[in-house]
Amino acid sequence: MGWSWQIAKVRGIDVKIHATFVFALIWGALIWGGGRPEGWLYGAFLTIVLFAVVLAHEFGHAIAAQRYGIKVQDIVLLPIGGVARLNRMPDKPVQELVVALAGPAVNLVIGLALAPVLLYGIALRMQAGDGIGLPAIAQPGFFNLVAFLVVINLSLLVFNMLPAFPMDGGRVLRALLALKLPYARATNVAAVVGRSLAIGFGVFGLFTGNLGLALVAMFVFFGAGAENQEVTQRESLRGLTVSEVIDNQAPVFAASLPAHTAFERLVRSPYASVAVVDEAGQFKGAVTRRGMQAQWLTGKRGTVDQFVEQVTPVQVECDSTLVAARERMAEAQASVAAVYCGNSFEGLLDFETIGRVIAMRQMGWRDGRGPVASEG
Ligand SMILES: [Zn+2]
View (cartoon, rainbow, N blue to C red):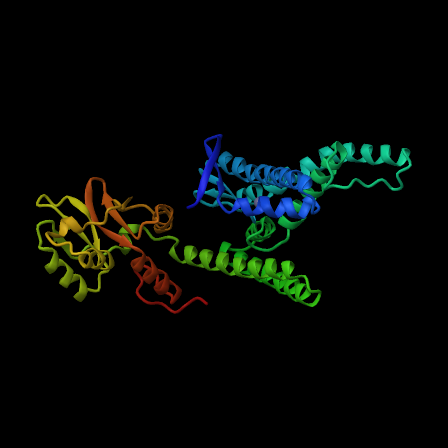
């Protein structure tokens, strides 16, 4: 993620903070600072405490994921919260359930551990005759800070357990449904529940003038759609390997081919990307129609191998699954992957091909059986 800085590395996980986090600090200073300059510093301190709790929540997810052998790329703290980026999602519903619950569980444990301290503080104040003696959480003081921690942990717990994507509760609901239903169906149902909830909150927010709530509802509504689409696409790729979908008759360019000839062929060809190979047939890189055009416009000329994309394409094995290959490409933000069977270069896999396969599968295509009627 651009504009973020690493602040720590714990258990092999980079902890990063996004530049926009500074807005959260200012917001916290103003909201909790109570309009007095001397309060601003304490307001900023409370914001840091809040984000430390968010970080603990994300570590809950991350450590649970690591236990299932899932690599955690990093944890990024954004003004709206934290994100633990996992290299892949757990495949088994039970694992997804555990990973989704591990974050809120951290908040539950912190909240429960501090509750007795808070109750003791309240009792002390009542004894001192301070009325009901509820702590003022935005004021400096030991019991006030404990109260603040209890309140934010319980709020995070409740908010994250709302059964709507992209909240943890949405994943918990999907995982529970997936114990009985196929994964895609479970996601559909969970997405409908999440969207209904979001519409409810949105309408409530608008009618009560709570625009913040309406905004969160909108964010949840679109989050549910994105999750649903992602899973539907992934499911339609399931069961296919890379070698089943790449075109081994696709054209290749010899490295010494003049660039203008290559470009003209790309313009006339349906292929958006073409492999460039040397005399020995070794893969040198890929050229894309768009990439070649951009370089051509800067005045670059010569042979086609000079136009090979700077970023080396991701390499995938021909017998790896299409789902895994697509994940690798997305992770590396590469539009093309070079497919190898052992040491021999077999062809290119690009997102155009993957998109075509998804579209054909959704129309009922199953490999080796020709077109079949959709199973609905
Ligand atoms: Zn979470």
